[in-house]
Picture (spheres, rainbow, N blue to C red):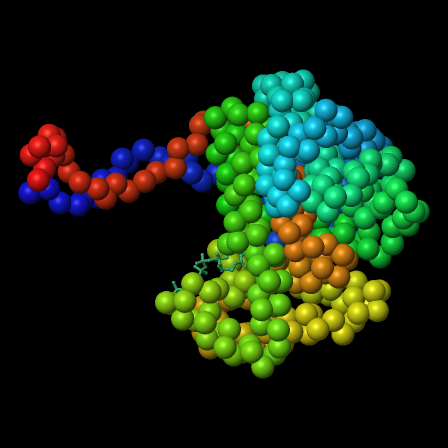
Length: 394
Ligand code: SDX
């Protein structure tokens, strides 16, 4: 009689990994990159400096920073032929669909940075990916709203350049607001890396087979798109707009606790944090500053989010399950106030996380012990049984 059984293959899993890039203490709500706390980096550093730190393990000196900034700036343009690639998409394509497709296609345009065994090609691939993501993201946005692409400028900072390519139009002068640029840069820092989350693990697993870096980052973008992961920032805004008023909060909290209801409180809970996500704390403060700057400090969405957080954090279910706001809970409110449509929120997450994916991919490739990833399974299927021809199967 065949029955279900479990079989453990016994070999050591290659599903987990060692890394020196990011440390998280989920119980204490601590996040550090190469030993520096995220709060300090968000307050005192800038995104390109954090990129250097993640890639090289140390904060750069002045000469290193100047050379790194020059390298990234040099790679911000996209091969002109890729414009035709964009034009193949429907205008109403989700920008994440465009980003996924275009980033994967980079390996068809940049053959001189796909040989992962060559350290120089790896470095060029790192710089190209970090430099071109803002250009691709802004082009995906421009294409979806029927506006012309805006080319990058070398006289602007990384965040300024992205805002310029996204919001400038040929018809008039566009001045980047320093407050918006600072908020954008800080949002990039807060999303840069986060240890072995789903999308980073996807990039590592894809890279472990020797696939080229562009294909690996495209795989990471696909994984990040899910609403349980990077897609949550878009889902939070949609949820807040569906709740609409604080009187409706109890109804949605009840749904979030109902096991028969698939609704989850978006922007709450985390695989690792069983305390307040330190990134959410910084974003909560940033939301105030950006909205103040825009003269929207009593933005109804922010007020609703703060009320929702207050009620949820006093709710026994959320307290017992240790569910706190995560990085996605406040980010969308800031992005919406800055003028981004919700469809662009996860694109911005992918833009910022590219440096984390690239740093983790490099760490794996440069590990001499590295093997192809092969996560374990616990087999719980049938024991052996004889084949039955169709005419004997009734
Ligand atoms: C990101 O991994 C990373 O680092 C990701 C990320 C990064 O920077 O890369 O931090 C970015 O993805 C943040 C998370 C964004 N996702 C969301 O905000 C979506 C809403 N959150 C949930 O889908 C959920 O919290 C997850 C997916 C994030 C985690 O789910 P888990 O692993 O099931 O969480 P858990 O084991 O801690 O859950 C404990 C309990 C479970 O109930 P029981 O099985 O114990 O009965 O709490 C429940 C969960 O069902 N629960 C929730 C909930 N999150 C967990 N109930 C209601 N609402 C929620 N949001």
